[in-house]
Image 1 (cartoon, one colour):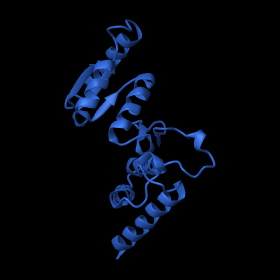
Image 2 (spheres, rainbow, N blue to C red; image 1 turned 180 degrees about the horizontal axis):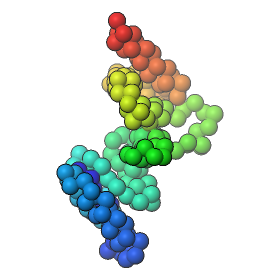
Image 3 (spheres, rainbow, N blue to C red; image 1 turned 90 degrees about the vertical axis):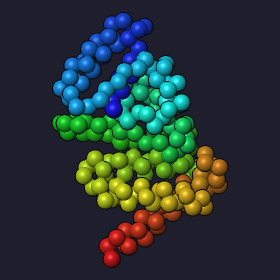
Image 4 (cartoon, rainbow, N blue to C red; image 1 turned 45 degrees about the vertical axis):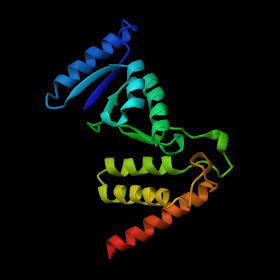
Length: 180
């Protein structure tokens, strides 16, 4: 399902136009189930039923707010990744940690690298490197499940380097097993 995030009840010009464009594009894909929600209600529903949503189409402003909320729901800003995807591939798609570059952690070796690694996995998936993307995500999941390497945002004491190295080691181990 694709959900249109709007606020056309209060932003009478820009969001009404947004809704019209969304409806026109959606009409080109009649097999895709679509939904629409006001941004404030959508924020509430994301908290109450996050699994209900597959894809949310939003403006940059609303999307920035909702992705931060969704990051908190899934475990925090340190593990959330996002993508700005051009499905026609006429322009590059972009993948990034939701938290951005986190400049306040520069040089401290304590930022959680998982969001950046997840963004890389999303990019691999987008580029058609499905096996590599799955390998990376499985390594992240395994390291998190083990519980030994966690940065402070996840209640641990590991450094950026330690978490990254643990994931790298797991990728290499799992990758070698796949090759054999």
